[in-house]
Amino acid sequence: MATAAVATASLLAASRLSHAASSSSFACPRRYPAAILCFVRLQRRSSSNVFRRRFCRMGHSAAAAAATSASLGLTKPNAVEIPQIIFAAKEVDSVEWEGDILTVAVSENDMKKDQDSKFVNLILKKLDEKVSGLLAEASAEEDFSGKSGQSTVLRLPGLGFKRIGLLGLGSSSSKVSAYRGIGEAVAAVAKVAQASNAAVCLASSDGLSEESKVIAASAIASGTVLGVFEDNRFKSESKKPLLKTVDIIGFGSGSELDQKLKYATDVCSGVIFGIELVNAPANVLTPGVMAEEASKIATSYSDVLTATILDVEQCKELKMGSYLGVAAASSNAPHFIHLCYKPPGGDVKRKLAIVGKGLTFDSGGYNIKTGPGCSIELMKFDMGGAAAALGTAKALGQIKPPGVEVHFIVAACENMISGTGMRPGDILTASNGKTIEVNNTDAEGRLTLADALVYACNQGIEKVVDLATLTGACVVALGPNIAGFFSPNDDLAKEIDAAAEATGEKFWRMPLEESYWESMKSGVADMVNTGGRQGGAITAALFLKQFVDEKVQWLHIDMAGPVWNDKKRAATGFGVSTLVEWVLKNSQ
Image (tube, rainbow, N blue to C red; front, top):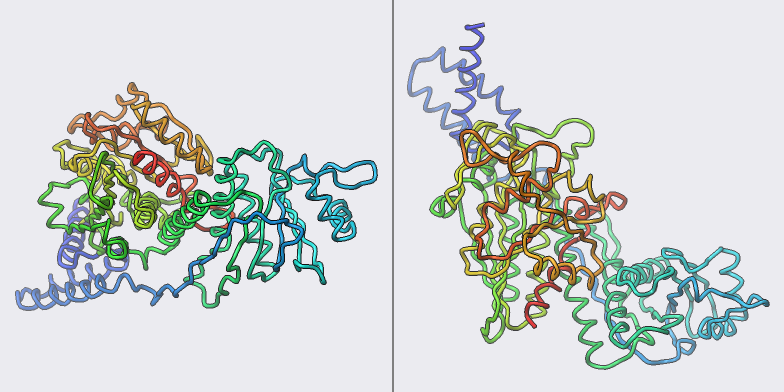
């Protein structure tokens, strides 16, 4: 037992030595044999020159591996054309429209027919007469009733439009999500029809105010752009989107609607950017590459955005021990990202911050993710909060809202395993001086957010929202489609609720139960980094609260569920639309 313990200690020492020389752990399980072999050889040879040669050779090869880790597998994303669709609001008779495909959004109520099986709805009746009753006949044969998600398309040679499609709006035509679904359906049927132009109209706009029509048109435009977009950067073959123009008929016209349609496309560019960031694998999107992407945003919109990227030494000067503790195990160096939006003219009435969790890969550390359901293969999406923050920055760079300054902050790093990494039981010191006993290395996101929130509060802000794929507990509580949010401030909670209502993204306010903090107390430090299984999302939020200035309004969003679409096996871009809307509300 004692001999084995000495041998084990010696091997671990050799392992730590190799890692200290290389600062690389990208494939540390493969490095242990090399470290052990080197140690054995060193025991056989006492020459210090031999030691130096072997030590330096290992350090050099590891450094080379670290330099090329972002190109692991020789994978580089292909250039993909982002959908450039021109939307035009028109007040024309839909029956007279000419183009590839005319789509009609119909509710279940619109599908009512008389005793002769003819449509009662005036627009559907008129269209059906033009196609000699085929529309009513096809809808009956295909059991199309106007339910959400239903669609039916007819090819009609010899008419002004080549095809006509009925798209189900469902029983409620007042929700933004319903109209976004219509846009997605327009994209789907246009793709099947290989259409380059399309039109969309409502079978009935009764009860819709002019403002509601503008909102509906914007939601349809958003759904269409996001529906057309396909992230094919990592596929050997991909098809370019064909849809170029969409006429929106019967929703009104004028500068207000045109501006809203432009706003929708600007927001979509941010959502698509967020999707691309989350979809990118960890061997492509390293912390350094994420910092580069953030800097590109600032360069593209340099009239309103600036970028500051802090390296390890600069983070040490700011005493970010919590963040750097997480980053210590990886061969890919951490990058602390700070974008700052300042409005044209410089007149600032309100200062905000958006902080996004930026783990480009999360192995779990020494508490490694194992077993069924651990989803380690999906842990590239553990930077979904950062993607939402940077996507919002890109959208705002185009929209340029007045009167508001916004700081976008991401503590980007990886959570890996190596002899240089943090261990369970280690104590980290955050930049506000508070100490944290690490009782689980897989509760790492909150450790990075701790220093990011302290940094954000030091920017003189009034409000801060952080987003993170933080806990599985929140997914258990709310399922895969709803984000939970926590805040001690009712006014800020109402702002996020209103923004989410305007965009159709789903949020639910969760309680900040202060009594649960008892489970987060440590016997040797100010706190531990995770409590028990019960109320895990709540205790995570309570942990973050310890790093927010009491004078700053704070709200935490746990988006572990809606960041990813399991059915499509792809990112959703969740959070961007709501954050943009929240910033705009604060700018008014």
